[in-house]
Each structure stands twice: as structure tokens, then as C-alpha cells.
Length: 131
Image (cartoon, rainbow, N blue to C red):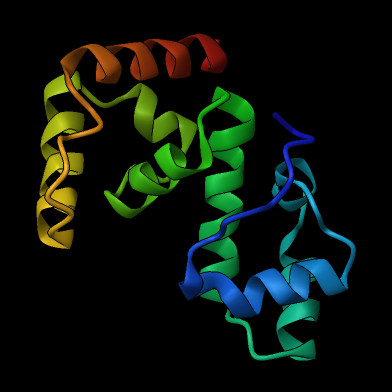
């Protein structure tokens, strides 16, 4: 997944996406490998924010390390599961509760993406990745 292109980022990351493109960062793997100095440099170049860059880098880590779809990684990030280790130490029930709460707050009206089976699969994968 490291070479998966950065496409269809949420509108809230438009300034960061522009900065990434301007700096030749076009894949999730390249984004994951950015360090804090790279982020600071890009923030100084444009209207992007350190906070959003760090969120994107967290999403990139989940995408690359766990082979998650970007939208699933973003859901985890925004639900408070911001790292592989946080996912590995979670329980399926907690994960379903946290992601479900976020989806209800967003008012998407769609069926929950994360059920107990999906949660268990993601957690097991995170635990294997950590070992």
C-alpha cells in the first residue's frame, strides 16, 4: 500500500494536499515517511497546518502498515484510534462503540462500517504487525 496514490482526500485537507503535491509527495508511503522537520517546512510554505499534516501522517501509517483503505484509516483516526499500537490494544467492542459514535455524530445515515467481525480482524492484524 506504500505506493497507493494520494487521491480523494477530504476537503478539510485541501491545503495540505496541495502542499504535498507541490513537494512531490504523491503516495501514502511517501506521506508516512515525512518527519516533523518536513512537515514544518511545508507549513511555512503555504496555508496548511501542522495538526492536519500529523493527522494525514497517522492515516498514512494505518494505510501502509495495516493495508487499510484510506477511508477506513481516516475513520479510525477521527474516532481516536491514531496508531497501530492503539488499535492493537483496543477491544472489538470498544472499536465498534468509538467508530459508531463518530458515524452517528457525522449523521451519515449509512450502515456502520465497523462491526465486531471487522473490528476483530483489524485488531488481530495490528497485533501481528506489532510482533
